[in-house]
Amino acid sequence: MSKKGLFRQEALENAKARWLGQALLLSSYPGWVVMFLTCAFIGVLLSVIIFCDYTRRINVNGEVTSLPRAVNIFSPGQGFISHARVKVGEWVKKGDSLYQIDVSRTTRSGNVSENVIQAMREQILIVENIIRKLEVNKKSTLAHMEEQLAKYQNALQESYRVVNNAKKGMADMKLTMENYVDYKRRGLINNDQLTNQRYLYYQQQSVYQNLNTQLIQQSLQIISLEDDIVTKATGFDNQIAQNQYQLSNLRRQLAEMDATGTLLVSSPLDGRIESLSVTQGQMVNNGDSLAQIVPENSQGYFLILWLPDSSLPYVGVGDKINIRYEAFPYEKFGQFSGEIVSVSSVPASPQELASYSNPPQIQQNGMVEPFYKAIVNIEFDHRRRTLRLTNGMKAQATVFLERRPLYQWILSPFYDVVNSLMGPVNG
Image (cartoon, rainbow, N blue to C red; front, side):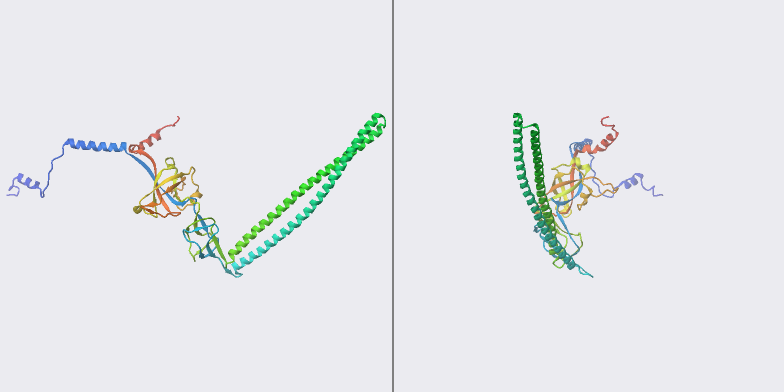
């Protein structure tokens, strides 16, 4: 008898359907509950899409800098730092010594510094001789011109006397001619005598005019000579001043080179030492950066951001931004607040971008996108602690742009399609 025939078919199916574990069976939810929950979810979703909004934002790079920017001090020559005279944070005045650089070198012709000092001393002697000769030439030239002026003035006085006498003689001749006219009317003289007297009068008048012309010419010569004296004196003074200025520079350079071939690097302005790039004993080359000085009239530290042109219509003065400094990780310190105080109206030039340490990155296709410089007022306090910021500190900022409802952002691709299908605006 087969196994199949021993048991009933219903018993076999029941054995197959029996559960091996325990299960809790619940009754199903009513349909109206499912419908209510579905409608509620759709209602909440539509409310969020219609009534909630989102602000588009971009992340831009920037760096901290002072306004006015810090002044970089560069090495004037090759050598090593023999003495550092300042420390970070110290205030310095214009002309204060910052570094002493030993630039002495020895060649086949001897110590270069000593040779330079000897050459500078010879130049000083030459310039001093030039100044002395200029002073002697000025004195002799002006004395000669003053003597010539005195002679001209004496001749002018004599000419005044001669002209006055000629004027008086002309007046007498005129009176005599008038008397001759009266004599002729009375018949005491003839026409020849009257004509002769008139000729003598006009001759005397011509002599007076010639003398007066000579007098005017002498006056003009005196004025011209006086101008020449002033011009000559000014020319000599300018030459002497130029040579004295050159002499002063040579003496200053000699004083700098006199200390066994050393150069003194001085501060070009009043301010505070922001950073020192080298230490005592370090070798430097010509043009190496030595220090940064923040001007005394600095307004403090600001954040410089480079905004792409696509964000310019949405950014304005007074907008708030979020800032993250590389030196203060935002995972620990969080984000800092900032306020835009100015936005440039023209794109930054490549030269201006190159002068900063954290300029925007150039696109891979090689095209240079225009960027606009924004100055941001930043905060220094964090959890009752003041953060110490320095020039060149890198940062990244989140700039908030346009704000729209969510449904407009969802439908923005549709707007793009509509705009692409539109004809001319004024067509």
